[in-house]
Image (tube, rainbow, N blue to C red):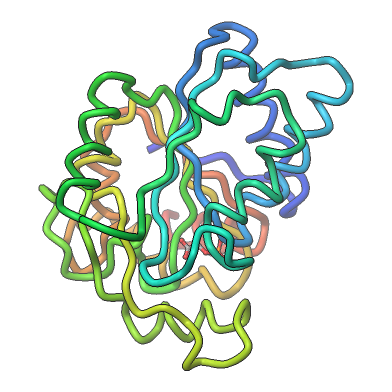
Length: 244
Ligand code: PGA
């Protein structure tokens, strides 16, 4: 795992956005794996800016998102469909028929299969990831088998509590989601995991211990040869102290 330490969240976002822009410039039909949450927001802002400045076109790019809540309408402001639309899709020239998100409604078995088939047809070039405080990637919570494909999950209480900030109260947070599995994520050709701030310290410390365990879903990334961990100074001071 390659580690890139930047001074703060903005510098991390800048770095990752430039990696994605360079990838798309070099391969205009790049397949991007996208994440939601607070972590990638700075990257999306910079991608929009790069598009507006004429530095990049998304006309031939295809995207796959990691996950979606179950029980929220796509039009709900806190759905990940709405998040992607607000943060990125509506601001750039992406062809929306090439923007895939798991379907959080209807027949989950059929939609999970369909998602895996589409991913097989269009393998992800770069997957963007955040990490939960409990070490989850996508919505793969601790204890998830590493060989899982796209599947339905019940969210950890910790995840529901973390995500409550986006809802009117705890009771309004969905308790289930559909997510790419860990095996699905590991099929991406390259992976960029971003983490910043004190809240992620424990998860990153556990990741950097090198122990591969289903108790820490992100540790599966040690089994992938092309992972870049991008962290801020808050975390890198601990990582260097830890690795020395
Ligand atoms: P965050 O969430 O980016 O909002 O911190 C990350 C995650 O839960 O994977």
